[in-house]
Image (tube, rainbow, N blue to C red; front, side, top):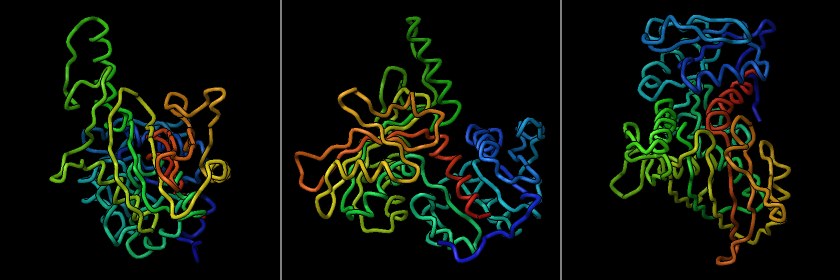
Length: 344
C-alpha cells in the first residue's frame, strides 16, 4: 500500500489534461472520468494541431481542444496520455517536469526500468516508483486483461508458465481499422473485392495471425509486449509465450490462456478464487453454454473469465478463456483507476 498521498487533497478538484482527447481512447477516458465522478475542477483536452479547435463533451459541457505543442503544462495535476509513443516521448517528460503526474497509454515507457507499469488490481504498489519521475505506464490492452485473471491464481499457487493465444478486435488498431472492417464487410456482401489499406490482408471474414511488426526471432512486437510486460507486472519469474491474432470483431479482445502452476490447482478452486477477485466476473456454466464473448463484454468494465478447466494433457495446468473491452479496461479505465490511486 502507499505510504503517503501522491497529490494533496483538493476539495475543489484537480486540473486534469487528456492528451489525445479526440481519439477513441481519449473519448472513452472522458466518459469514464464522468461516470466515476472523478473530481475534475478543470478539464483540459489536448491533441495535435490538426484536431486543435474542435470540441469534446464532458459532463454535458463542450470544451475546445487545445494544441499540445503550444500548451504550457504548469498547474496540471494529472495528464492522461493516449496519443502515440512518439508524442509521449516528447511531451510526457515536459509535463512531469512541470509537476504533473502522467499516465501514458502508449508503449513508450512500459519497459523502462525506472517507470512503473501498473494494473491497479495487480500491482498498485509499483506506483511508488512514480514519485521520482512522475510518469506511469499503462500496459498493453491484451496484457492488462490477462494479468487481472492471473493475479488471484498466482497468489494462491505460484505460476510457472503461461501460453496465450489472443483474438484481438480491430478497434485495437484505431478508427481506420474499424472503418476498414465495416467497409470490407459491405464490399464482400455486395460481391465486390475488399479494399485493403490498414491491415496486411483482408480482415473481414478472416483472421490475421500477425499484430505489429515481425522481429528476427519470428515473434511480433505485440507478442513480445505481452511476454515482457507480464513478467514486469507480476514481478515473478514466469515463462510466457504468446501468439497474437487479429479477428473481425469491432470491440473486445479474447484470449485462450493455458497456465502451468508449481503445484496442483483444481478448476473448482480456481473458479472460486476468480469469482472473489477484484475486477473479475466469472461466466462459466457449460450446462447452459454460458461463457464470455466480446459482443457481450463490449462497453463493460470487468475482465470476464470462463471455460475454466484443468488441462488433461499436462499436470498442474489449467485453461482459461478471458475477455474484456480493449478500449475500456484495456486502456481508458485502467488509466483512470491509476489516477484514482494518485488522489486517494
